[in-house]
Image (cartoon, rainbow, N blue to C red):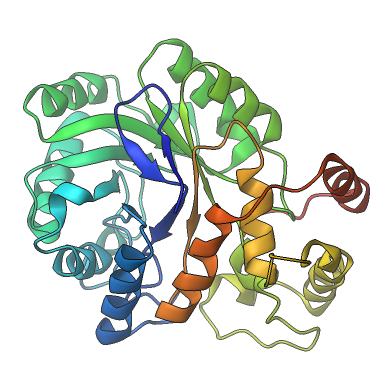
Length: 319
């Protein structure tokens, strides 16, 4: 495993991190607790030290199921791990945005209990859709959490890119955030310019959805039928076929030491100098091991990257 410094922070992070949305969530297909624990153990064994979670990763009756699962998986290993979680959205509240001071404090206190820790390395705003959702008192509350040692750094997990990328730029300029999470993959490269700007400004960039919700796993066929309630269930047959055909055109990236399409997809992201690390939402120990190997692969040549640019003549909207 290769490691990088997350922006201008003092956090040394594995270039591949483990995202936990799938742990006991139906959005990507449920993962049982024992399988999730094997995935976490495999991540640790492969040298992954960055783990991302959120209160939203639960269900209508219980917030933060994934936080609880992760906390159990990292028991006795906290000092080696870098943990990021989020605030502002909970499944028990219908994913309603709540970006104000008292809510942030309460959310962090609940996350600390679920994770079984007394501090969070990076606390991300969880996908505000508009600057209007941000209450003025949230910044003083976040400063207080940092001063108390309960949170080390603040970040912004970006969704609705066109509407909120400017927020990330402004917050970075004002030195309010130390890191961002952003969708970035071979099928969706719209964040490329923002990544370059933030990376140059010393903001850590965590790339997510870099397997395009499974389309870049190579396991999705033209006639795939996705379970009701999953993210990909929203796509029409035409949209599924378009994505599968684009993935097929990128198959040349699997060559030599690059043994799988997931490795190719993550390696391409890591070849961007503005990216600190890339998250994988791998559900099994075998998937974790396959994705983790991307960090140790050599980068693609300039000719190969140019060919990618020629093939990727459009972006596919994130789910």
